[in-house]
Length: 229
Image (cartoon, rainbow, N blue to C red; front, side, top):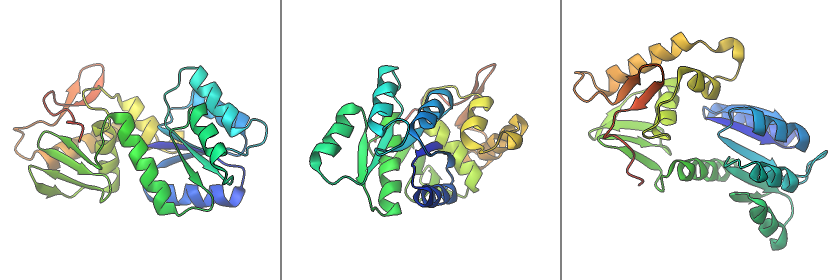
């Protein structure tokens, strides 16, 4: 998953980015609202963390412009303002949730996870697709109730697909959302990880949970779509 952090406090932005990267997220940083808006509009972002007190363009105005453009990007607001009116104003501008500074990284991660699930139509932290389950808190996959050991990157590929039940996801889309640097992006590597995932999830080849749709990419097999838990 690719997260955009728009925060002008350099130390806080670095701390957030470091923790998110350690959790497997790809992170883009902006330290002013104008740059942040550009990245949010033009880059393949899955979620934005937006400070309200930004230079160049306020966080509120940034969110308003995103929503005016029709963007449904999940937005988590960070604010040092403790008045309830400020929090309400952020939500009414189009933010999906907020955190008041100072905050614990664990709460930030939990709120991010909830927003990503909600955007995919899931209410429960365990994503279900037929016999396949993905616990987004423990970062553990299971097939027919049996744990499946995945590498960090295999987990990220599966998580991205499960957040998009019934959708074909191209190799280009996967590389854009899962690799931090263009130099590291290689669609052939995605093929390797998908092949390994298939072998781990379905060793005997009977369920075929991940299918290739010619010319489109990869998708969960029809009938494995998320049940919205």
